[in-house]
Image (cartoon, rainbow, N blue to C red; front, side, top):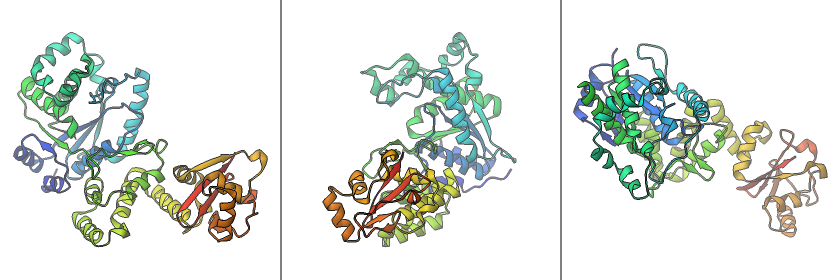
Length: 423
């Protein structure tokens, strides 16, 4: 099938090529014919995260350009986990890894097309690893890995003093074997991943050369960092998970909406499918009027829609607007409202004692430091319950005011708000 000859140029413009094997050979391969490529995802957690999202969107870019994806879920490698600089991983049980494998598989599938001339294929390395004997593994795979080269890997050198198990030390052999297996069985000749995987990626290329005399390619995407160089992908509550049960679409949307001005152009290039002209125009307007946050809004809308769908994006935007007094707060779904209020700050109140008055609610939520301050704020017209101004300090909300049967939304002024859940 025909391929898009501008793919590599687009990847370069988007800043997605941190390392490549032979750049000219890779360009030739990607412009001559449909290349079979693979990218892997280890189920070392019950959900994929922001770092994995870079690989998911990159895989879609390659498929859109006419190349053929093999998405690998590491049921075997997930039993071990790639070595981390911080220390040894805790090993998970086979049942846990099997469960996480299915969750990860379900998260990967929507990003690729499994029909057409370059239909994607999903594979699990547990299928060819679980029946492999130790003797065969050492003879057929381990024979091709000089220990001195394995010791030279950055993560290994970092861990040598503190200690690294033979299990994690050998991870590169397993991932390299995956590339060899896919090369032999399916003609896969390209692998990519994050730049922290570069040693594993080149290990697979070298194994194919040594074991089969074959030619393969690899490239690595850069790690995404904040403006100060620290790692991205962390919220106050933990990783930026793609699973909506682990991180709500509202919180996900808010993360991108709060992207740093210095990084928003890079994030638009990396994570969205907006065309170059549109991104560059957004960057120009952002440079002129950054306070409008047009680039951040485009980023948040595009990435949230990509991961969670248009309906959840609309709900997240409606929630943010409603919480700040610009929309109908009663129209929000209970799950979106709960997620938004949980992020803003919410308190639970025992419904057995009835609904407290507005002054007590203000102090319970921390919107006022004392009852006296709460009363003054009400008298000054700065207190709202469910976006309706409260003018009487003795006001007590009724059960009919409860949104979704349990929630009240309190706001002080324009920007401070909190939730109260009656239990």
